[in-house]
Length: 266
Image 1 (cartoon, rainbow, N blue to C red):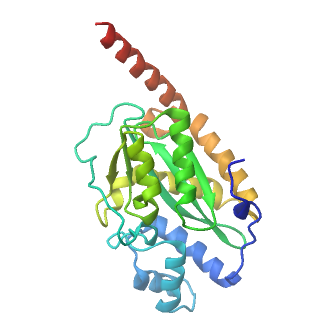
Image 2: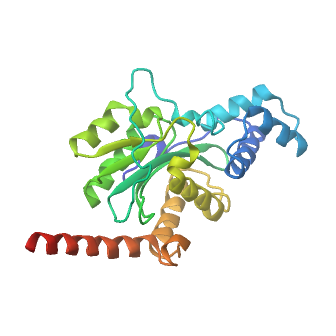
């Protein structure tokens, strides 16, 4: 099933129901205002009637992996000694599948706890190529998703991510280098450099996560899996002329391969 034993039998604990409720509210607000820092988020929650202080909100936002865009999310902190790479997509025309992939991690609220979700998408068609759920922010689940995507679809020309420790880890970057993939990373504090996957998180949370509060890791995996299948194969995408991402991916991929064969014959 490609899910870690610890995630399958995960029993969330450690945070009170009140803190979990605050974390969900913070997550919802952060989708709307990703520039809110600890102070602004504290003021917002106080205005909504919650008696909280900055120390508490700072701890919860760090636990969730959230920090305002001008400081980068906590999930995006490079580890000491890890190499970072320049942003390669500025001014680049992305016009075919597998030219550019991107990846990111998001906080996944549950009824009595939380998990983390990583996804890899095709930049041109917005198709979700692979994903994994974990109860920690270690790099392993990201590398597992990357291995699956490369195995199923072949390597892309460029992989873009933020500068998080998961994506600057040796395991991640070595897998890309061995596959001949050029590595691109968002500029520090550049929330919009990976905008397509940020939009995916927003859609996923409003159409799936917030509507169905899961109890266990296996429930979360099943629910996210059903939604991603729907998103890829049936959900109309406005940027794709109303077509689902998977339909456009395979259509454009076939067109690209046909064009390359014609060029080789010529």
